[in-house]
Image (cartoon, rainbow, N blue to C red; front, top):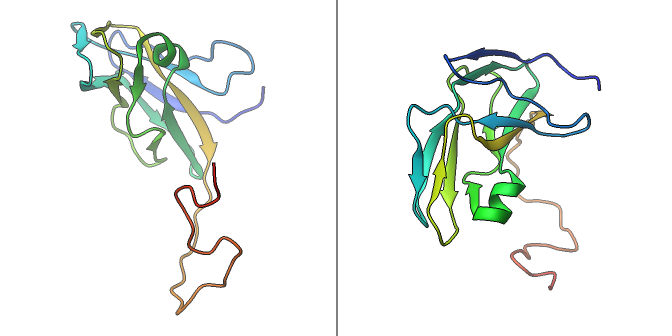
Length: 146
């Protein structure tokens, strides 16, 4: 599969993102913890990965939930997808929340999220007096039916 180069640095014990299959869209992000973190139901925590990346201009990295954690334990990512801009050089951290009914413990090295690299289009914004009408108009939040 053709792609772009993303440079990474890793804290001691951290693991680089890895695609689990040849055509996977997301590369797994792993927790980098000195001690396990237990999320009680409805609790959230910022989980470090020990990973920093350098994306080429014109790209972003999206942090997305892992479907297995969501389906099996009710654990997902808040602020999803989280955007990592191409000029950010800090550690990638994942906001996990436990929406399940049982406590969930995150351990060091556990796959906690996916990283999807995507192109970005920057728009120019022009202030106008009014917008062109459309069939939908101002309808939103269920206005088109169920």
